[in-house]
Image (cartoon, rainbow, N blue to C red; front, side, top):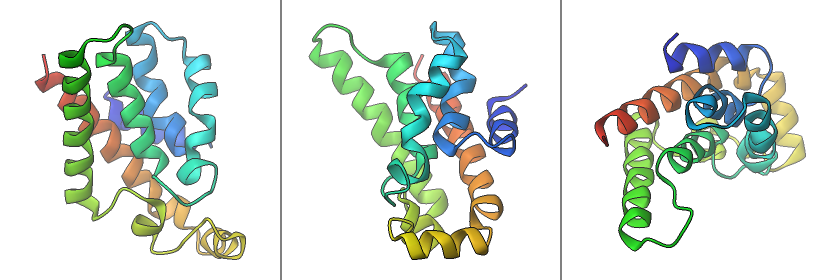
Length: 147
């Protein structure tokens, strides 16, 4: 199953946006999927519904870290990882105009009253599946081209 489809399917099963993007890639890089779900949990909703960086973006950046991150200091490898992270964010921003929940949803979910309004408008289910799918697809493309 392609990662975009897998990510969207996980989101439909009520995993958050970060979990849905991160988990499909985890086992390929030696991380059990259940651990990936745990690690990514607090990144959903723009960092725990704080209305910051979109969880789909955070999940994709975690994938880049699994694939190209460093375990010992290596400036070139670290810079290469950062370059991939920046490429991902640039492409995602070009597609959707922003990388934050408020910028993507048009409402600041960091405010509890606004979060409730977003839920009433069902924006998490009408807009976010696209962000999740696109993030998974973009990170897959970026990693495939980085070989």
